[in-house]
Length: 269
Image 1 (cartoon, rainbow, N blue to C red):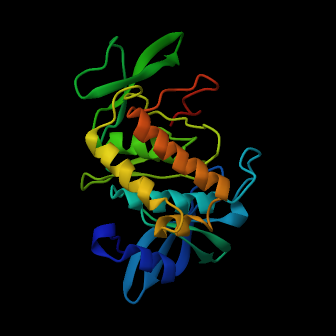
Image 2 (tube, rainbow, N blue to C red):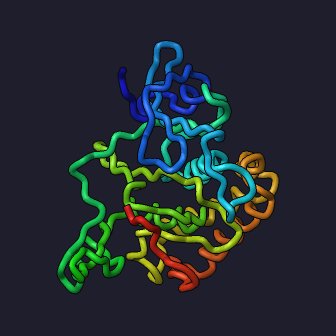
């Protein structure tokens, strides 16, 4: 089976129209996650298929599905121009409707998270907070201070990501960064839980403010992005999305933990 990057094939068309063949299952996932190949007109790629039928109900997300929110996250990511979420579609598959997303092979040599016994992060790193490492010892959890990771932190604030774990960060061999697993997003209440708190309270980069301005315009009623999100999210969730974008533009700073619940997801990886 050949594998292609988003740049070398019309990925969305392939995912939406291709024939899905289940090759295996990602066992460690809490919901049904199937590793598949997708083929169409001589093109083939690896992908992930998450059927709605395999989702566990979430008491605090009574509306919609994980699959719909995954696709909504892709749509918002594309609207930013940052391309942080792999191509993702909602379609029928062997086990019914579900989310299908291009498989991204992560670079095993890339380091985005680390533990250090130093009191302060080294150059090129941002502090997240203390972490228990066993036998009563703690270490400082840090993440890379990179423009790509910072963009993802902004995107997570926009989509209200309640579960940004380390395993959801995929640095590709070509240097691009992708984020995956966006089923727990777009809640109307503040649910932001993430490992990417290193910029909390800092001023947003000019690039981010420009992107947020464009995103705010794209989310206006009647605009194409708002129309694409309408079948995926509730009207209240879309309105809350607009409000978060507006608040980020007005405050001009990365959000800080609310203090109302744990700010870091568990398990963090």
